[in-house]
Image (tube, rainbow, N blue to C red):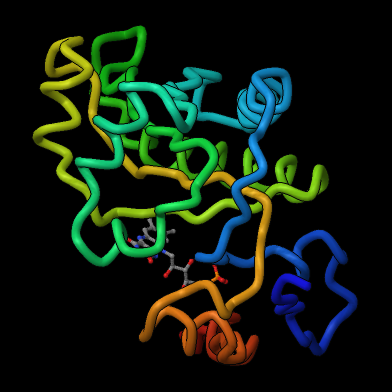
Length: 194
Ligand SMILES: Cc1cc2nc3c(=O)[nH]c(=O)nc-3n(C[C@H](O)[C@H](O)[C@H](O)COP(=O)(O)O)c2cc1C
């Protein structure tokens, strides 16, 4: 049985949000191309400033040379637990400039939002995601060979979750440790108006 780390909340948060977490132990079960396309299409239905849709994705399936190239981009810590990942999805920014030529300062914001929709769609299909900033953005950009307009954001591991026992330390302990969050009172500010 894979690890379940359902959030314990004070308020009645949606079940799909409570169940989302970032596992590191994945089974070797493959994810189909149709499922990956479903997951990416879900991301495309996110909101974005001026509907610019700055997100782009590159999906690499285990067993392909692209997957091996993406795996090589990961830092050592992330390589350690990605040995069973089924699909590595590279999330990149495209529209750094808006249609009117000004810098789209919301591109990163909007891509993050799309990545969350991608995750929730995946979770609804029994597939989990683990986002990673620990990879070489410089080499990723060179590998994509699409110019400076494309900015790598995160590498996303996709897979069906598996037992924590498969992991090396310290990842096994992390897999089993409880999730924690700042209290709602810490993030919901009450400014003292003059
Ligand atoms: C932008 C971003 C980058 C991250 N980079 C890494 C990473 O390189 N390696 C890793 O193991 N986890 C990484 N994570 C996962 C976070 O550590 C994780 O989301 C956080 O601890 C909260 O845990 P939860 O997602 O299970 O709620 C990253 C998450 C985000 C959103």
